[in-house]
Length: 474
Ligand SMILES: [Fe+2]
Image 1 (cartoon, rainbow, N blue to C red):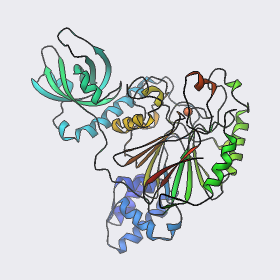
Image 2: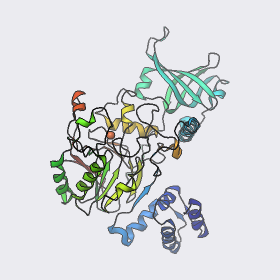
Image 3: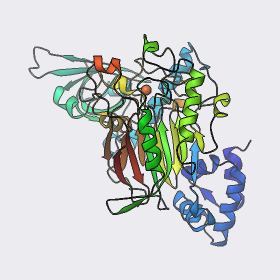
């Protein structure tokens, strides 16, 4: 086993230093020592001592690997099928303390939050203060003095609780949810122990995010929610997908050669996921559903790499983070299938991609007024703004507190792809591409009952060289 310190030492022995992204890139490689020696040899000759991801991208775009993708996968979850931390209150406490600390660190870097004080110290002050806290409670209220609708937000940090009053207009501009860590600026009333909040600060997305491009002229594609085994799986359209993937296209004056396909969860329909599911499936054995999935993936061109991750319908544990498919299932698939956890962070030719099935959409609908099942990229934007894949705890998304606050988005991705809601939407958040991938299942009885029309069989294609995005109705 190679540890991060071994790699750091290897570089310092050669009088070189690494930034954290480069260290993660090296550690996610199959042979971290071998790739480190390769980098050291290349750059020591050039007398370059500070190694960044830009230099790594230059190195690999100049080397013989140009024709092959350079993909690194950061593992989040181990392969355990059960969460190791059932009923572990302490671990959940640590998990939220960690969320608080990580978000506080980010917020503290903001100029507006540079003078932030703890809740205990704020009570000793008068006038304007800034505080960073986690939202313990939030509710709308209308007091006699306040004609305008007001929200009451209870904030907590590691020194205490404070009640904050904030006008509805501020909340509408900056919606917040329970368990979110925010900065607030306002006037403290130390006698009555409350703060009148004038401004809410979230980690947010920097406006100057670079639009990072890949170093080769290839494209990648996204779909999701195949639900193989369901009576509503759109089998006929699968053949059309295969021929589309196997052909080079020219779209908007760009040559499109799809190298990889990402399937963002709910690979099969599963068994017993919801009451009455037996009426909706035509393959009742879950192993047979995966055999069918494997058969369908084999029908796609064999030169396409297929990255698959689980969703809430798959065989792995429902508690997030979800591990890759188990080894006995992996054996069913061909070599071009790559198994990922949910969520997964991968770097593809220098472009950072965050893949998350999207169960948390079910919690954001209901927590954020503007979030609906037809506005998934609003929710995705919100996850990036708050730096959490699961901003609200205790709802429909079961989470495990292991793996050190796995839902925290430490590094903002260049491409963020989700699925789950069977809609299709593409948006951009300051050069971050947001993709809610389309399903391969037609409208189910449950969706009909809820008057929801899915948008199936739309392939999303990203040209990595230009970062242009296309939607192709298959
Ligand atoms: Fe799902």
